[in-house]
Structures are given as structure tokens and as C-alpha cells.
Length: 145
Image 1 (tube, helix red, strand yellow):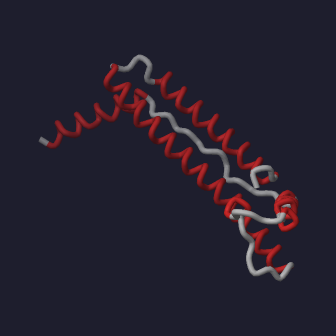
Image 2 (cartoon, helix red, strand yellow; image 1 turned 90 degrees about the horizontal axis):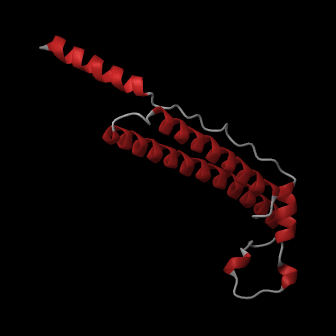
């Protein structure tokens, strides 16, 4: 499965997503480089956590798409060949190489094209947004009293 075209496309998609997210982190670091150290660390930690979470979502989605395609092609093969089951080679203790259908499944997967969602969009928290919201909050707090 790893050598199939859809799996390779998933790896490429994930690499592009990783690059987008890394650029977002770099932009966040640049935006907050002159902020007070405690505030800067907090914002960068929150940003890094959000970007890591997004990357985990991207990986999960891509892997699920490839696995769904693999399962679909295995089910087609099983139905066409009237087999009882299709078992992963890694799950077998021993088997005759003649029973290995991996090349057929990979060829069927290679004939398919997966569509991945658009790359993630990173919106960097601007330093002035943070200042403005604190100033707005102070003025609102003052007016309520």
C-alpha cells in the first residue's frame, strides 16, 4: 500500500500541509518577536499547539482516505474472486507467495486518484489585535462601573 500512487499523493499532500503550517509558525514568531517574553512564549506555545493539532487532523484525514480506498479495492477483489476474506500479509505467520495479491491491489489503487481537501489556512494572531482587545476590555470594564 505504501508504494501505491494514492499513498504517495497523501505523503505529498501532507508535506505541503506541513510546509504551510511551518510558515504559519514562522510568521507567528516574526509577529511576536518584540513582545514581552512571557506574553511571547504563551502566544507561541498556543500557536504551536494549534498547528500541531491541525497537522494531526490532516494526517488522520489523508490516512483515512488511503485506507478507505485500500478497503474498497480489497473488497472488489474479494467479490470478483469469490474469496472468503483478504488478509494483510503482516498478519500471516506463513503463506505461499502465490497467494500474495498485493501487486493486484496496488495496481487497482494506482488506477484511482484521491482528492485531498485544500491546504490548511493559517491566520496569525497579530500583536496589535492582542493590544487592541486588552484596551477595548479595559474601556468596557471602566464603562460598566
